[in-house]
Image 1 (cartoon, rainbow, N blue to C red):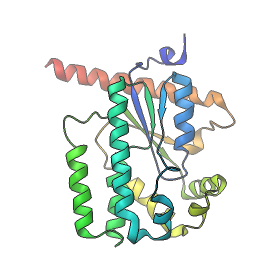
Image 2: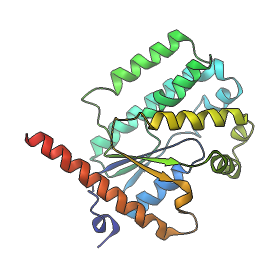
Image 3: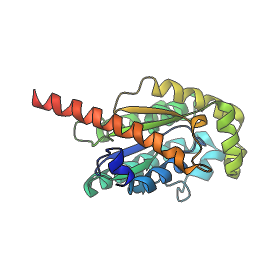
Image 4: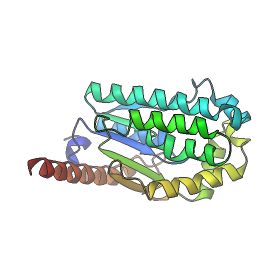
Length: 227
C-alpha cells in the first residue's frame, strides 16, 4: 500500500500550499507530491519579467506584477482541474488579492484605479461558482525570525536587499488574511514542527492530517448535495 492509499487521500485531490515568502512552500510542495505520486505546480518566479524591476521600484511595477501573477495562476488552476486533479500547488491564487495587491494599495504603491481594476478582475475570474477551488489549503506558519532566517539561507539577492520592515508587514498581513479566509478548507502547519529537509519521515504525520481533512470535507459536501 502506498502512502496515498494508506492515508486515504483521493487521487484527484488538489492541495494548495500558502504562506509568506521563505516559509518553505516549495519544499512542502515537492515533498507532498513525491509522497502522494502527484504532479506539482510551482509559482513562476524566475521567469517573471516584472519581479526584479518590482523589487527596485514597488510603485512603478506593483500593478503589472499582480496582473501577471493573477493571469498565470488562473491559467495554471484551469489546467490542473482540466487534467483531473492529483496536484500539489505552490502558493494559492487567493494570496494575490488578499495579501499583495491589498498591501501595495494601502501602502500607496498602487493607485486606487489600478487596485479597483485588479480587484474587479479577480472577482470576475475567481470568486464565482464556476471557479474550481482546491480540496485543501495548507497554511505554513512560523515566527518572523524563522522566516527571515529562511530568506537569508535561500540567498536571493533581491530578497536579501529588501528592508526587514517589508517582511515584518507581510508576516502580519498573512496572519490577518488566514484568520479571515473561508474559500476552501484550511490545514495550518507550524514550520517548527517538522523538518522535511533532514527527516523525510516527518511527512507522514502531515499526510495523516491531510487525509482526515479531505475525507471530512468531501463527506460534508456529499451530505449537503444529498439534502
